[in-house]
Length: 612
Ligand code: PTT
Ligand code: SF4
Image (tube, rainbow, N blue to C red; front, side, top):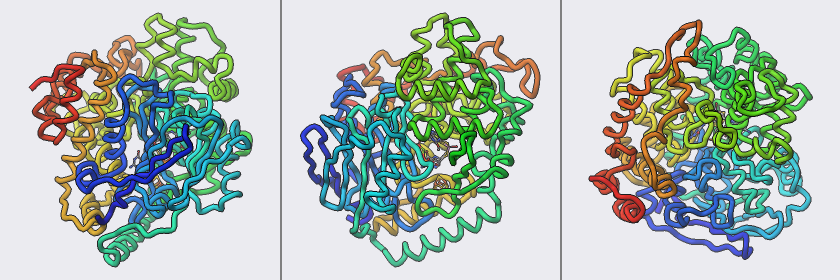
């Protein structure tokens, strides 16, 4: 088998044992890699109802067939587990040297199970796995931890680590890797922490099995150069992801004040132009020629790496418009290992709940110093941090007073930095995003605002959401590559079957990938339904406040406009129909069969009756 190493490394932290397992070609062809491998393994191996923060949960680290080869943006890795934030399948995708080192060590997948007795870190060097005491690094931030590991093992190693947030089981703790890379929004860092696992270090020396090595070397190297050239010509990485902030402000899509407002006159102070002016360094993932990580000096003088989501959620949504202060909040999230989106959304919800009288507290929008202190408290679960560490949905359920209506999340995962109070297609994208409200699955917002009437709820919007989910939540997550060349530079999708075929020796067309995407989407949905057998379509609704006329903007481009709940429900019905899911949002028996999931759905049928 080319393209895949065909090997899984299973590590048990309770017994300090490990073993290599092989998987069949059929498994590789059906699930391809990354998210595909993770969703199938977790489906097979997790018992429904387990505590995501208990030893029965498993952490999967998975790459895909094109990961790590010299072709554009192939330095990404998927981390996945049952989510402590949503209770369903959760994952994330981060740039890491682990991608290449894991492939060179001879594996496509790591399965980490059990729980170490004491704080531990694990090293994987080809066939050798060792368990080490993490006593010296437990309690340290992710930057110090990475420096400590680099000093011991050299800078070429792949590292996945957590900060204090993961150690203290903050439900939105992420996993960190090289420089500013972070991933696993739905609490993958907390799952590592729950296993007393501070870090995973990987180093490999083998060759990645490629069918046509000469061809991939030539095409991949040419294409890396080409992507770099297009980036230079377009100037995309001058502002990188933050270029979108000014646009969001202009079209009334910016998160401001817990998403109660959609634009702000001070937004320019934290936009991409200001960020580029403040730039002190640029970082990127391995195998990337359009490096997008921009760092600035934060208020305390640390280097903080900033993306749009981070600035939107820790800046405008908290009404903090001093770039260095936003940098400080970003740096703290990175060091503590907290997801910036959920951390920002949770703090914004807290300030809003205090404003609305749902709870007493001493935090106000715009108070950067207190926000920093609250992040520290959350990461250590001290004082009010015990509450903040739970995320906005659980907090709302404790506060009552209808505060759940303005907890800006779907399925427990905080909404990324796009305020959709009047953007129906993007609201649907958040509503139906596989793992909770993440923009990574379907970023339909530019299509919707630039190319369609914003107030339409037509079937074509549901179709577009699915089309993007197939590419973003599917293709890029299972072949495992960064999607930015395609999203930002218009790099043709047709390049991907070429890489895939040269690597695997197969002859797939783009259409072949969409079947895999739909299969993965259906099985992720099955995970959620298995955990929540009372599943109904309201779980695919965004928060109530986006439907509340009292919450409509009073001025600006969308003054007086708000989402219509009945029309949203019709849009959702189109989405289900196009996907072959029933009116509860569950794939039908026929769809499951078509996707080769009869066995999995027969198991699901023991929990909930399926429809034809
Ligand atoms: C991703 C989510 C994002 S998406 C951002 S900014 W973005 C936030 N970044 C965080 C951060 O930084 N520090 C932190 N403590 N928490 C953070 N949480 C947020 O996490 C990321 C880039 C970006 S920057 C994006 S869009 C693209 N995402 C990709 C994806 O999801 N899949 C894929 N195949 N390619 C992608 N390319 C781009 O990668 P999650 P990274 Mg992250 C500091 O993982 O859980 O999906 O959350 O991976 O290596 O940092 O690169 O405007
Ligand atoms: Fe990493 Fe950015 Fe390059 Fe994508 S574009 S591979 S996120 S540095």
